[in-house]
Structure formats: C-alpha cells, structure tokens
Length: 299
Image (cartoon, rainbow, N blue to C red; front, side, top):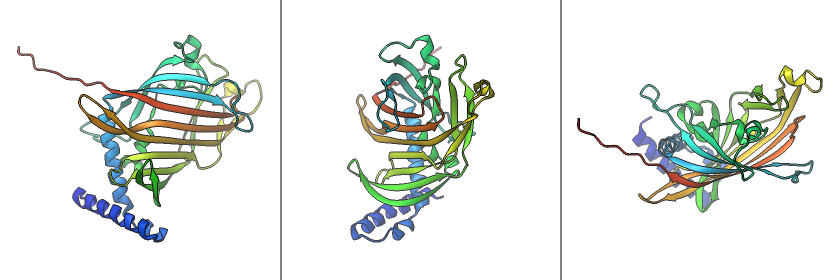
C-alpha cells in the first residue's frame, strides 16, 4: 500500500468520522470507513513503540486475589513486584517480527525477597519470565490472524477514539504442563479463541485501551500425572477477561513522551481448578530509560 495515499485516506477518515458523530448519522456509515488504513497506521505506531520501548524498564506491581462464589475477596491477596522490559528483535531478513516479548525479573513477593518456594508458586508471575506483548495483534503478521470491524467512536481519557472489535480466527488450543517440583501445580496456556475491542486515538493512532476475552468455554485436559490418583480429567475455563489501559508518560533529560501501559485487570474463572476464581490487578509504574552511548577509540 502506498504510504502517502494511506496517510491521506486515514486523515480523511478521521475528518469524516468526526462529521458523522457530530451530525448523529447512522452506525452503518461508520462501517464504510477505511478500516484497513486505520489498522495500518495503528500497526505502524505499535512498531515504533516496540522499537523505542527496548530502552525502557518499569516496575510491575501485581495483586492476585482469590474470589468466592459471589466474586468477593476470599483470604489475603498475594503481591508480586517485578522489573519489566521489552524484547523486540527485528533483523534484515525479518524487519517486523510477528510479536514482541515482555521480559520479567521478580524482585519482591509479599514485600520481601523471593524465597525458594515462591518461584514455582501457582497463579503468580513467578511462573512466567516472559510473555507475548498483547499489542502484537496489530503487527502485520498477526492482523491476518484476526477479523476486525468498526464499532464506533468513544471518548476515553479526554481523547476521541475509534473502537475496533476483533476476533481471533484460530480456535482455542491448550498447552498444559506440570510445574517442575510442584505436583499440585499445573501451568496452562490458551492460544486462539480470543475476541475483544481496541480503542485507537483518532489523531495519533496510539492504542488507549485493549480488552480481550475468551469467546466461549475451553476444556483444559490435565496431564496424566495430575490424574493418577483419580478425580477429574480436565478443567473448564469459563471466563478470561482482561482490560489494559494506556496513557502518555513524560520523560526528562532529554524530554520525551510516550503512550505506555499503566494498568491491567484480569478476571479468570476455571471450573475444577484449585483456584477457581482469581482477579489479578496490575500497575505499571516508575518508567525509566536506560540510554547507551559509545565512542570510537583510535588504535
């Protein structure tokens, strides 16, 4: 696609949509907008973000709260603090990789240094030292794995945003494993079957909010080692809902601003599991840059 024509089309799209909203016209007219141009520009912003964010680190503060039948808190919450950074590795052969990774180094658990048993504790970030950055769905190689449609325009954090609904084409696939040295702990990962909504800033094309959820029930087959004493052969994931918010963060020396993730909320409901209902609240704070430099040393 010609970038210059695409930029003009996207600018025209924004102008047209503002006119539509102010005139109170029908949703059908919004659906005729150039969705492809909007997604392309949002993907370009995500690519720029991944390239720049490699020089950033932040503090991830996670609260994990077990819930009762009425979704009220059950017992004390667990708190985990970690340092996060982004891994994005383009090459000459692959200038825009399919995904970026978030790398995690656990610093504190419940206010103290991690103990030996904390590293393999169930339902905590200690089990994952890396994970796919969710904005990767807007990269070119992943956009083809989703269907998108325009839902409308909303005001979020004082900005006009285009709301895009998406659905993952791939059906759910579950990867299950026992956590090493923890016979009562099972780790599982669900790929595919996701749907959600994206709020894209109509002026800058930055992502302001990303919601994701499972499209239906997902069966999680248990490893044979976990069922050797009898009991159920599988769990059922009933709900997995997440909402991530992004806001502009200011930096000094030199001055710079970037739209970065600031919070995330996840609700997980798994029938049959030892922790059937879990709410995870995450804050991303204390962003800082690490700048590198070099000089040529004469021989």
